[in-house]
Image 1 (cartoon, rainbow, N blue to C red):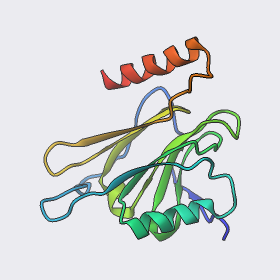
Image 2: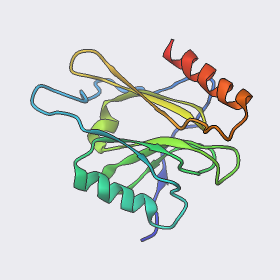
Image 3: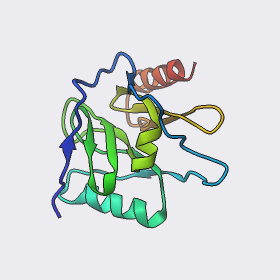
Image 4: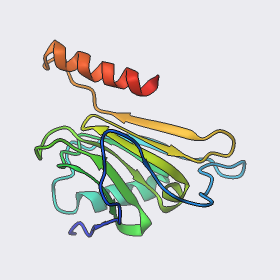
Length: 164
């Protein structure tokens, strides 16, 4: 299967601030009657043809509403439509084949999303409307010990800034 994706009408994705959706009445992500299922997956590349479709199939099979992704290896930042109403929000490196993080959201999860922030190729966050308080999810892909101490310190410093 070939990835059939359509770029959503977002003028640009910026890394210096969150992208806020202008939605009047976003859905609530969770409720007293329905639990939300959130997973994370190191996909080790979605570069291959049909890999995004396989990901959506697994997401549906497991009943996940949101999947945090690491090591996408896609270039740039974007929001794409996938099959079954799912959306993928991602933030990759300037060079294809390096790092990359993102989220795949079911249609209901996407309808509850208030904003997302593509910080860099290793950190992305989304904020969704919750039943009580709103919910913020952060997906990271940390550098391994083979990276320089400076790269590792930069990563944790950026992450700490996001959590503050």
